Image: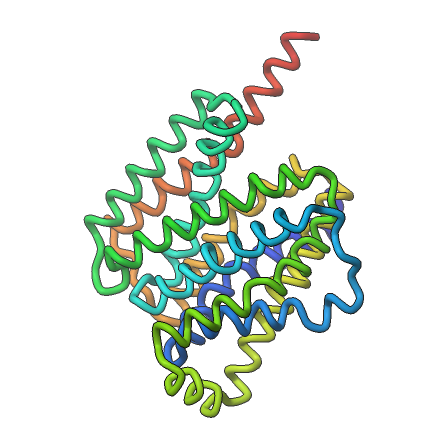
Length: 295
């Protein structure tokens, strides 16, 4: 891969990792579902004026928008606001890879390979260790909500497969139009109109900069560049680099929030990362071996 492309891929994974710290900061004094609604509004407008509607059925567009906007990010923002650390959240969200494989096996008839099963076992063992080491920065409720958010991400992955060859950047931009209203409605329902109105009145330049970073930098720029890199160099080369997202996420959390990683917590994180690597890379190695045997 050319150095420029590798540098862009690393930049995007860094943005995605740091985004978890920005989420934690933004929900400290504002309703988390309101913040999520504003993030998707920033991702959709004005981008929809320049990007054509993806050629997918309306039900798929709505399903993707609700799975990503309401379930994945709505619950993630809520989990972080309820005490989930930014670093561990960036790690546990990657369990979407396991949920995707299990859902594909259940609904699409795909086979879960031995390396994938071993990777799942390692990762879920690591999550158990993290649970044992949980302090104030990893709450049981936050842990559960983060895993359900990862499940929402997995559902959206299956919807992407159903979309076939649709323009994924257009799908992300247009589906971002769907999330703001239900998220804002849930924010008013759970927090009350006064809390929502107060948060909007009190929002300063730093808050709106965070919204733009999450909406434009993380979603529009990040996904746009990532999609371009996959088109140029193939998913096999680019996708495994997403394993660096929790590395950047945990590093940023340690730097900005002084998140501690004692030995037991670090062991759990290492097991999860090892399981993810085995899940993503082990299947590719097995496929290459099989291809070589066929030749």
